[in-house]
Structures are given as structure tokens and as C-alpha cells.
Length: 174
Image (cartoon, rainbow, N blue to C red; front, side, top):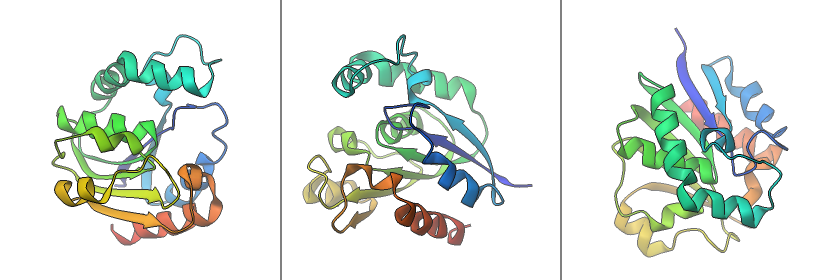
């Protein structure tokens, strides 16, 4: 039986998420995959919002609502592949009891505000040129596995080259 993998979107949810198929295509023969729109988990009432409005929505109760809904939807052990705000949702869900074996969080820059590490094995990826990535002190204090990808920005996860390398790492860890 295949291991379970859930994929949590960035703050754009299912909108403009064609890049997610890169990951699904490469990992579906190894995992039973479920995709979640972070916007739907957070019950965003109107997805026709600007980037700034989306950030505000998530920071003003949206993350907490998404965490609650994710925990209600999922049971049993799983692996999580989460992008941007999805990584923050997954991290907080782990802290509240979601049974995650491995959490791959890509460009989840809001983690820099977290002070508690989940029990799950967390593997973080940040673009070197992402101005909001956690600083070295946070990474050292959290004692979490992390990768800083040279010359990459926040949305590096939408690039095929990055997706291929990440999926190979995920497969090799099975």
C-alpha cells in the first residue's frame, strides 16, 4: 500500500496552480496524493483578492481556520509537501497533533515567527534571494534540516528544475 502524501498550496490556492502537476506527476507512483487549496482550508470567502489581501486574510484567522479544517479532514500518518503559507499551516497542524512523518516546507517564510518545532521531521527549503526567509539564528535554534537554494527567489517551487530535484529527494527518502 502506498504512503499518503498531502500537498498544501501556496496563498493562491487552486488558482494558477498548474505547477502543482509537476509534483503530482512525479510522486503519484510512490504516494496516494491529496491536494488541498490553502484558501479553501482557510475558508477564504472570495478568492478574487490581491496578494496583500490574501496575506492579511491568512494572518487574521485564516491560518488557524485552515489548521483546524486540515486536522478534521486528515487522520493517520502522512507525509506533507507544502508551499509558502501551506508550510505554515502544516507546521501548526503538526503542533496540534496532525500525524506527520515528514514535512517538506518550501518557501514557508512565515515559519520565521515560530518558536516551537513539531515532532515531524521537517525539511525546509528557501531561495537564497527570498528576503523573508528565516535568518541563520532561527535555523540554528530550531535545529531543523534546511536547504538554501542559491540564486532562487520565493516562487522557486514553480520551476520545473527545482520540482524535479525535490521530488528525487523525496523519493530517495522512502
